Length: 371
Image 1 (spheres, rainbow, N blue to C red):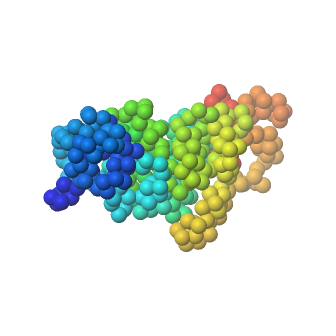
Image 2 (image 1 turned 90 degrees about the vertical axis):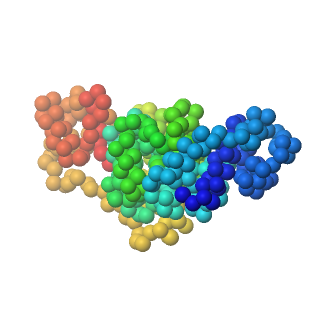
Image 3 (image 1 turned 180 degrees about the vertical axis):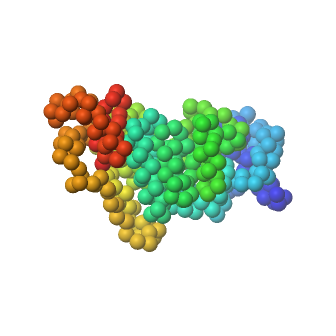
């Protein structure tokens, strides 16, 4: 690594990894002193004027070189990057949020920072329909020219990244821990696939372990780097709503997919819609709202063609059964009562209709209609 680059990174790391100095204080110091090098060269009196504790000032005077050298060694590995606030490719949208991170650690294809990002987030325990929606929307948004951004968490995050990869498009995962480990560990293969064409990002040094307090902070980066946020499914209290609230505070567009009033995972999205989030049924609903961006990145108008599952070709009993299956989960007993068909016939028909993608099974042996 070039000596000048190494020194520059050492200065940034000495500032950002100093004891008791968070992003807000770092920004105040840079506003006064202009560069990390100037902050480190300042005397005790000048630093004390910024209400720094003695331990923080001593940390600036004597940086943790063991930690810094570990990070520099990490940066010497292929595909690893440090993006500082002063770098030309630090995302402009992220710069505009309140107290953006001064440095970002990244693994993968650095050029993906220059893409137009769009976040998809949601429940860690989604329904089968929610998983499918996340993946389908990610595929279509990626095909439209947007780069899907999420948090590599269980559930909706995972399926959002999966959809982007299915379209052979880059995707960005923002982690709440250091990049030397993947959390959750079961997503390591997914992370490896993302690195090939996309990017893993964290504001935490590479060896930082997962901690509950890290993830709400991580969420501000997911929304901050993105032009908008889509919430697929979310309980009334969830990390996804934290991301959505960050997005609203940051002036981003927030979108939400509605669901059944009986689905607890729809309560969060319905709450967002009541607060002014855009109700979304198709990808076109998102692209219309993002039209200033969409006009730049799209080469052709987007249309969404939903497969009607060959309804007109169905036999009479199948039409009867499908007409009585709503978008809320229904039991076999209820369908037997509504249609007058036997339980054996209904069960057989349900299996065939599920295989054809007309309906989907839910917990407790219930079924609902697919959109």
